[in-house]
Image (cartoon, rainbow, N blue to C red; front, side, top):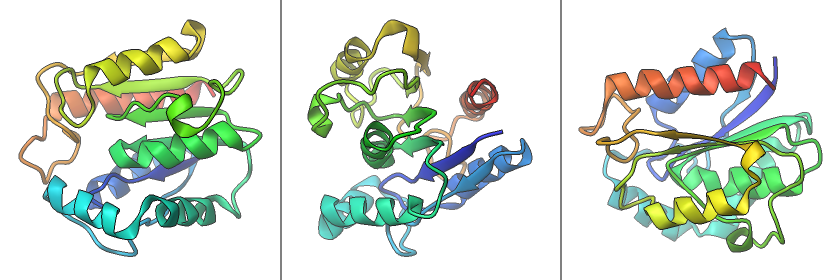
Length: 190
């Protein structure tokens, strides 16, 4: 079993994030879910992005760093959409990283200020082709930046952004089941 930190999307630490973390806990993992928005949640992506912009990235990153401060360094970092930025940045800079899961976000190491993908750190990447919040070309750029043997890629055609949240109109139950099963299997290998 591994220690996992889950960073929420621009919608905040919604019940779907907590439910996902609970599934991982039931598998025996220790899971932390820092609240980067201090309790605020949204159902509208534009409102959530406005909150992200109001708080500013440096503050969000400081909150993410505080959220992992007392955790073991041997972590798997999971980031949903906006949460992928702190997951990838912290996972790329902290020693002991056991893996990074990027859910509907693709940020290259260069865009994060890293010279390259962290050596030996596996990436599980989840993508909905055509998702305007996760452009296909950015996904391709991230896949090109990470050695092939370190990437496990999952695609969810026809789904919307954050399709795994049952309280959103874009929810897709079969895709959510596939997503959750893929993450659980991947974590079991860490």
